[in-house]
Image (cartoon, rainbow, N blue to C red; front, side, top):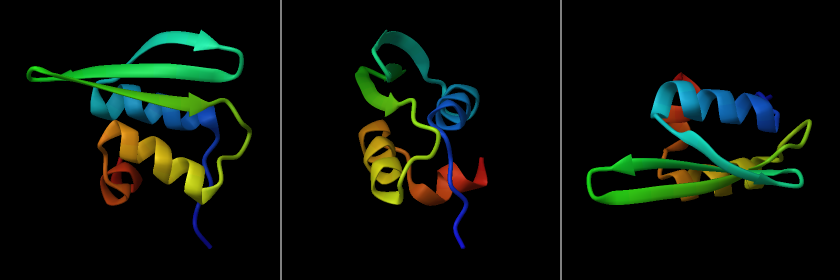
Length: 73
């Protein structure tokens, strides 16, 4: 069975391993951003206890991080 992640765990991994930083929070959603050369990459992470597979993949797609890279981190 695949490991499930909470919103807080995803945020910690994206900050620590992929260079994101917190921009803002509105309700239970946190906006993260990083600069990649001239490009600015933004993703939104919901602060749920458990993110479903589809939600996690959507967050990673916006963050331009592959599922394999994320799971290695």
